[in-house]
Amino acid sequence: MSKILDIEKIREDFPILKRTIEGKPLIYLDSAATSQTPRCVVEAIEKMYFETKANVHRGVHTLSQEATDKVEAAREHVRRYINASSIEEVIFTRGTTEAINLAASSLGDSFCNGDEIILSVMEHHANIIPWQLLQRRRRINLKVIPMNDRGELLLDEYEKLFSDNTRMVAIAHVSNVLGTVNPVKEMVAIAHKHGVPVLVDGAQAAPHMKIDVRDIDADFYAFSSHKMYGPTGVGVLYGKKKLLEVLPPYQGGGEMIKHVSFEKTTFADLPFKFEAGTPDYVDIAAFDTALSYIESIDIREIEAHEQYLCDMATRLLNEIPGMRIFGNAPHKSGVVSFLVGDIHHYDMGLLLDKLGIAVRTGHHCAQPLMTACGVEGMVRASFALYNTEEEVQHFVEAVARVAKMF
Ligand SMILES: *Cc1c(COP(=O)(O)O)cnc(C)c1O
Image (cartoon, rainbow, N blue to C red; front, side):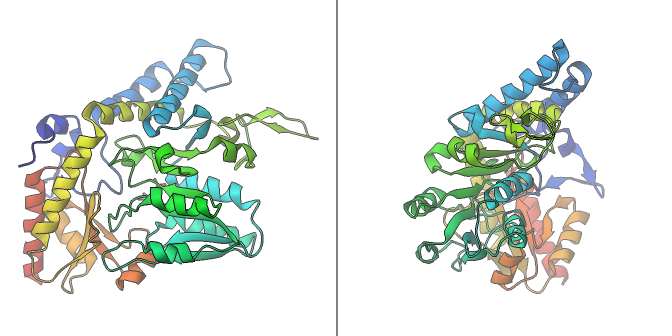
């Protein structure tokens, strides 16, 4: 029995978990796509709208000051949460996708024809397409780190991909499909040996484990609030100060300038240089509350609980005839992706929904990975701090039931 967390108490914080689907209690196993939001975060949003709604950084009036203070308090909280050196290194974005687009676009300015970028076969489209878009500006080449049958990246092959033209490495901390926890610290060290900076896509790591950007020594680190019990519309790009300082802005507009004239404009200091326009300050303030919520429970206990559920699901699913689980790395986090016999992932997802169970089906925004696995799609169950052993039990029984129907 998992006695790591007081789940009943935690579930009280998430009103949506009381919902029924098709008359059955909702079993939400799609937190890797977006996690549910505790009451305190929704209340923080409401409080912001009711008490502190005013634009940030521009006004002298009290409300504007308060709103500014809340955004900057959230920035300091994020800094502490990921152990960044200074708040200048914490840029608020709309999400991981925008964070990676920002980094790729600004870095791409200095790339030349023939430059190379190393990605891995298990990247989310958000960490592929921004680099491909650069190919409209420069003839750069993408090189891909392969993986083994268990879903682990091949570090020997990775080393071989470096050349004098390598300008960047961009890799997922945790695969959103396979759950593999990549050895990013080791991979960063290898890249740095070659003088190459690394962007880590932490969208699937930040909700599940302690993140220390200085320990990893990542040059850039991206993640999304909505996968960490926070509101939608907020993400973070961490970047090392000395790199951010020399990068050109991503977007232009208000907030990101020092002085504007039609002849010459100077840009604001970090981090504001990269935050054009009115930020989603309401949700940024609420993200602060989400981080406090995670801290009130302790990320290490959340990790242990999710690990327990993940191992349990894997073990029980494997007893179903025809079961194929994708991703069997010894170090996994949060998700189990699978197919049963010839059953189409979409049919499995639809029938599980009839039983109240929410899973994700399809290519999971990782089509190159699907190709590498020789499939078009998979079913993915993902776990969060509010899931229970009973839910995992019901889920596996439901999969077995569906499998028998075909
Ligand atoms: C969800 C996800 C993204 C994209 O995050 P958004 O919040 O949609 O911008 C990128 N990478 C990975 C690994 C993800 O799981």
